Image 1 (cartoon, rainbow, N blue to C red):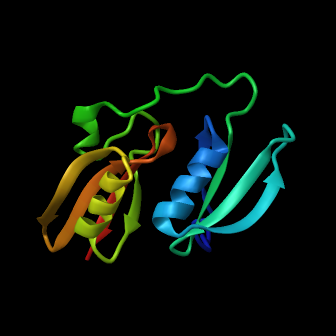
Image 2: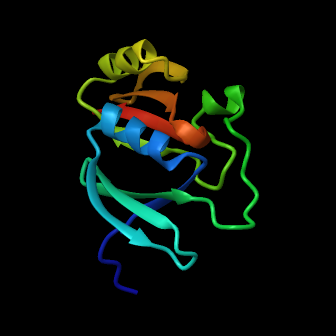
Image 3: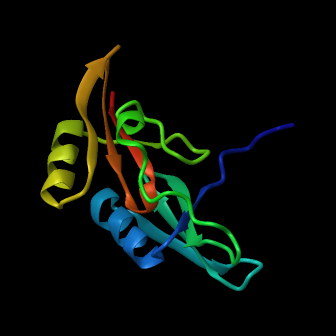
Length: 135
């Protein structure tokens, strides 16, 4: 198999507009396209730092997962879903955490530096765990 690139990460949302607002406001997400899935639901593609996230409602009949990661596991970067976390590289992790905290967003682990990487864990809508990295 010849892999060309990672195409996208699809995130199921309870409230797509809330999630889109979060990524636009805090991570300068840019709209790429709005498509329809096989159920006729909108699938919104956004660019976050050169990578594509796809956000949509959960398909009909899909049971929604827990709304938030376990706090102890979240401090270690582990969410309740199959994706442990999204890693987003930022210029300044401390400043990013300060901004998110001021906006009332959940912070699961304060910035730590290890092996030359500074990182922290924050929570996006729908319990999506984000590792902020700086290196």
